[in-house]
Image (tube, rainbow, N blue to C red):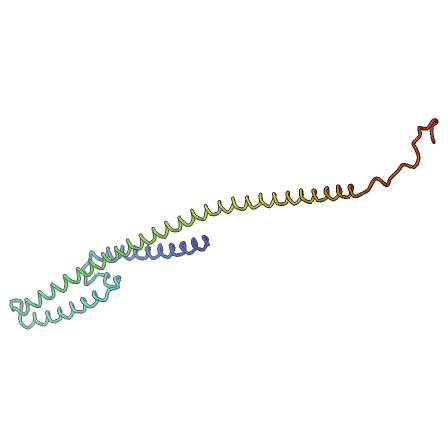
Length: 193
């Protein structure tokens, strides 16, 4: 029972360790990519976030409108300035989303590390219980052997007692009153050959 628990938790610990290592590697790559421009950075590919993709698509759509407005009306036009502000807001939102993705991945790494630590503690606890259980089983087996030895001794003594008791009864049951000497014993005068 304990060994199956240890095996189960060890398997889960190994899986958690592998997941943490994967997340840590991904986090390292995302930190390196975070220093680059959000639109050129591979952080877009490393993160699994639909809102980031939606923001990026919206940014490119608004940027295309901005480029058209720039050609048509020029930088002094209020529509141009509004479109520029919209693009800047979307770009800021993309940067904030990239930071949020990075922080979220950091939290996943911390959670994976906490899970791994908890599983390690559980494996250690079960291992200690197993060692204690083995010691208890050893004591039990020793006492069981002692009990069996005492039972065997008791049965041997009982068998001897029964045998002795039977021979005493047999000796008592023989009636010695019917036995009489026939002749008196005489001391020989000469050596008998």
